[in-house]
Image (cartoon, rainbow, N blue to C red; front, side, top):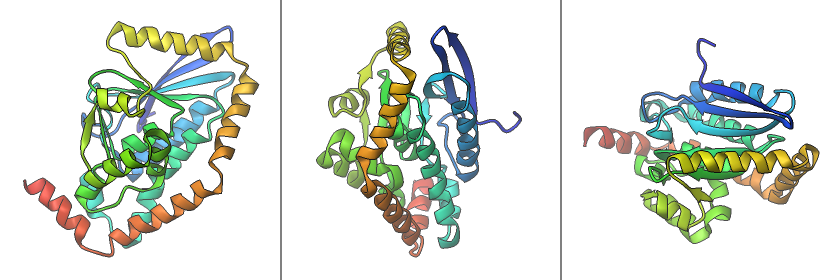
Length: 255
């Protein structure tokens, strides 16, 4: 596909198909904008329709980033009239992950920031290596952390989630594991071994049971999740009723 944003490789086993999917944003930090996210959503949906699919490992195409966040030039160009479509494109990609009938596992390397961390949080669990850096720096460019940022408190607790979103700081791999943001950290061949172990475990499970478990995960979140997403979209749009995003983003480029 000419404008492809997710490349994938299928591995066929007796028990089913496992896909390794790599997301390609802009530049080495895999930055995303509305168009990229919409394309990625369509491509991920196609992957999730593969016959006898059992698992998807989702990673970045660059060793330097899973997804390094939103392209600040795109953020700077947003207005009240366009902000909702942009932020909704992040939610729709995350929602596609959350609604998958099979496990979707994030494989993190390098930077995982803002929208990237929301995508990672939408996956069933996260593994990575010592190169990982995670953060939610949105307030530093004049907008709140919204949509699937709502998933962070259940992963790391309210205190740490609030700290990440209010400080906008970036934490290293060891801190990510310590607070429960990443379940496993392994380097080099040990990461490959872990991937194989996870694959074997998932293939040993019943596909219908796993699909049922995924549905239960969604039910357990309840209606509050949907309400939080709507509130987040509204808060993001309201940010563009002020000049703060443009001021903060321009300061970023000028410093």
